Length: 315
Image (cartoon, rainbow, N blue to C red; front, side):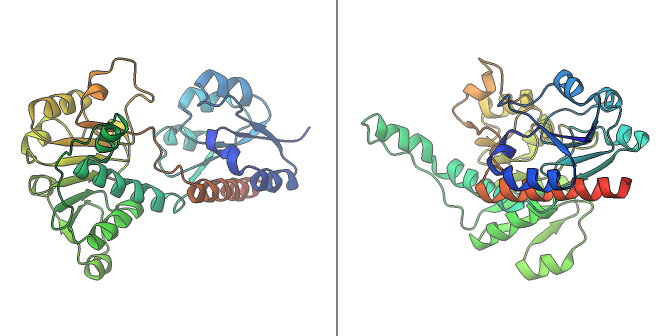
């Protein structure tokens, strides 16, 4: 019986031919998620409990009990970068290798971040819908040029955002206690803040580019909103759990900040009737940051090669 590989990401289907060929050439049987949605924990267990030695996973959940239920699992390859849906500590305990597809979606997510800045500043969708309804009312916006941006998280995506903001003649400050790339700061004339509060208070735009950990969950809370400018705009293309959504609702409702634009949410999709989603100054896109033709193709190839490399190490 051939060892099996489970592929769960929905968008993997668009560029699956080459990756599946790569896997089958190495003697693996490929199992695919053809449901058109994210797998549940129970579905992963049912498919992967026997014979599956590797999983290419998207946002599908891999907590401790799921990993423990996959008896032959040797490696997990993340289709993307963020690995907060995988219990990394349990994987290490079980001897399961885990690797993400670094450098595959940083351009796409950075470009969406800039797009959300323009959307928030110029209210593009609102203007388009007005004309489609045969109206011609104009809503005044603001320029990006000269505005101050606080980039929270200075990894690959944060750097790409910083570069693009500098190209738009914005003033950019990175806050990241682990950031150590003076050459980047010098080359792109980017500042670095030692203090989170200082970066937040002076920013016209606050954009989030960091993982969810016990230290960063709800890093944007009621206290932070009270420190932000009433004209400021929050952008979040990282993870929904970085923001206290109840505090965000209050901040947007009371004018503590002007707009929030996110590509992520604590529950995706949000429940029907969610009051935050209904606010006119809250913008939410359906987690499309890495959903470009180029990024999807890169993630499919790289995550497959990463998995093959890890399984080769196990031989």
